[in-house]
Structures are given as structure tokens and as C-alpha cells.
Image: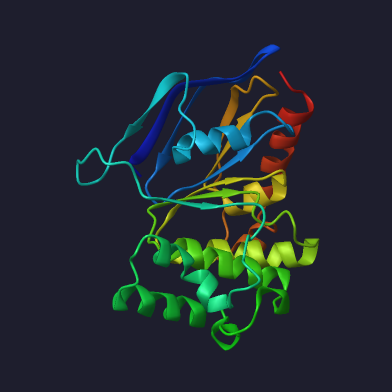
Length: 255
């Protein structure tokens, strides 16, 4: 699959009165159209900083991000950013939460609202559209947050540990369900996770970062031989444990 984004030699430092803290060093990898890329690395190594650079919230101090759109244009892919917490507003109903981005960007067109209604039905939230966020389970809140993100029709989804606040059982089912829905929508995704099993089961490719300043230690394509390619079934693939062990080895023998 062709790369829609290519990071080339990205570097970034944080600066304060006490000096400079190097966060990222010479980061290079590509993201193919429709590809799921997982980024793993030690805590505090700069994963979220890297995601903020890809989102355009931070400018890299070194390096460039090349855009290779299928139509040959140079426009940057439209980004959807999903954070660790759902950030739903309690004073708004579920429906008014999921259309918030459309309201802000003045894109409340009949076709966009029809798409939101379809997503609410597909994600099992249509019966809860008039409820408040406090009346939803953690998994349902994450689904609502995803609908809010997808409502703006992003080309590239950035997920910063979106399932970390959920209990383990809910995390398994919700992560599998949400990533299945993202694949069915034909979106490209970059996800940050500390869960190596999650990375192997969800991603087409895993980028392993070192401790700070983060460098790319390994880019590991994931190919699992299963008729059922769902993330939950992936954990039973014969190759799964080998991929997991290689990632574990990379992270426990840092540098």
C-alpha cells in the first residue's frame, strides 16, 4: 500500500529556563493508506509528542513530513484525534456531544447529520442519543467519542491510548470493536499503546521507540495467519506470541 505520510528524520526538544530536553531524535517511518500503525515505547519517551507533531499541533525542530496523496495533491490529510479520555460534556446529550465538532466547524449539513445518525445505529448508541454521558458505560463513552471524531470525516485517525481508562475486559471488547469499525470505514490509523498484545492484535505495523530521546528501534510488520482476522481472534494466531516476545525483548533491553 502506498504511504500517505512519510516522516523523515523528525527531531524535537522541549525548552525551559533550565535548558533543553531532547524528546525525539531522527524519527523516520511511513504510514500507508488504510494502514493501522501502532507506536510503542517506554513511558515518557515522547510518543504523545510525536503524535502531536503528526497532528500539526507541534512543529518539528528537525526533519519533515512528506505527503503522498493518491490524487497527487499536497494537501495534508484531514486529522481526527482521539485522546485517552472521552472528554464528553455532561451538560450535553450524547447526540449533542457527537455533533459538537460539526457545530464548531459549521458543517451541520443534512448529509453529515444523516451520517451521524447512521453511526449511532451501527455503534449501538441510537437508543441512548438523549442520555447524558454519566448514564453510559465506559465503552459506550469511547464509542461516542469515536463517532464525534468520525463525524468530521477524517482521513487519518490518531489515537493516544484511547482504551487505557477502561477495565481489562471492556478494553478487549471495545478496542476490537472500535478498530473493526475504523477498518470498515476505510480509515488510516496511528495508535499509541502500552499494551503489546493490543499492538500486535490491532496493527499492520508496530513502530518501537527507545527511551528518551526516542529513536526508532524497530519497525515490525505484523502478519497473522488466521481466517478470522478480528483483533480478539488475532491473539490465538500461531505467530502472535513470537511478535509479542520480540516487542517485549525490545522494550526490556532498551538502547
